[in-house]
Image 1 (tube, rainbow, N blue to C red):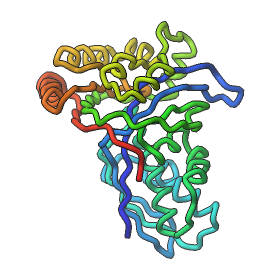
Image 2 (cartoon, one colour):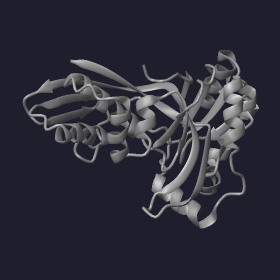
Image 3 (cartoon, helix red, strand yellow):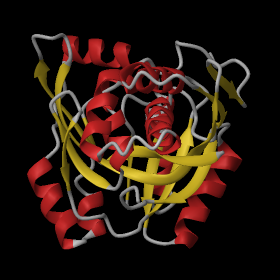
Image 4 (tube, rainbow, N blue to C red):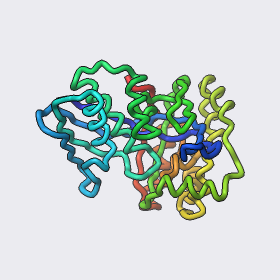
Length: 286
């Protein structure tokens, strides 16, 4: 049996450049791994694919990305055997943190190891992109510029380890809904992806914090004002910056120190019903 960890992500930037002929959106975003992870325990079997999850209401069949990742490897490489998987989720579901993509990436890496397939990172990313646009990033992790529909990746220097506070409201946001509403209304402000890459390369966390920008934020905030409230609360408690991740609804704050992060988290726990986490940014997957 093997154990594979998969880290969540936040978006430091998220820009939408337009709609593509294939129906996807052309994006440009800086993605960052964080130290909040799901765990997949995997063992080879002679039977079918089996999946159990510690979240009873989550589908544990072909609708689940982790299950589909195992099925893709099994089919692609004509594996006679199966796999038994136990997924322990800590990353909130439908939160803008790529939880499902993280699990699929962990399973792809796990199947590669279990069956000694010796697939390259590039090949795993090709397979992952068939299942979801965020999966290639989740396979590689760290700090990356993501373009195309999200699957074209450029490695950036790791952001210096930074404390992050997450606050996930007790609502869920559909990614499809967020993008559809963006198509209808657009956004006034767009990220400066060139400049934020320069500041990441310089290792200037404060400058990076000042350049956070997510074009989907204005879309989601119009329907869920709680996101705006959480951002204000984090800033009032000393965050360097605060923003919604992905299509939401999770709000994150970047903190200069563990002490500041803990103060923000305590305030959020006392004054909201959000799920709150204090973690740090992480480097690329080893």
